[in-house]
Image (cartoon, rainbow, N blue to C red; front, side, top):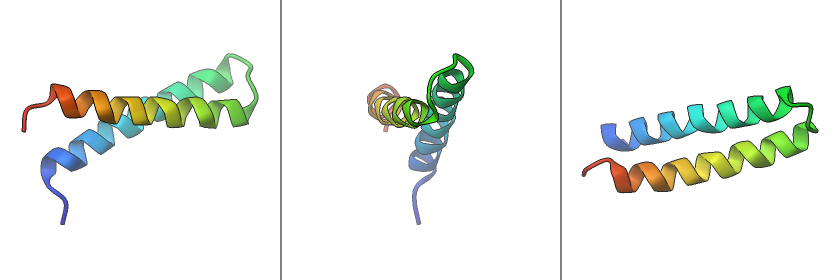
Length: 55
């Protein structure tokens, strides 16, 4: 079972990644570029949130 902190970090990072991907598609880019942008944003959000949110 994962802890609440981990679940919230991943959930927020998922929202950030989805938003980045959606905005990339809406800007007229290829869907593959949106997947890469969303994945990069997800990874960056996880790293950033892990440092910002106290344990």
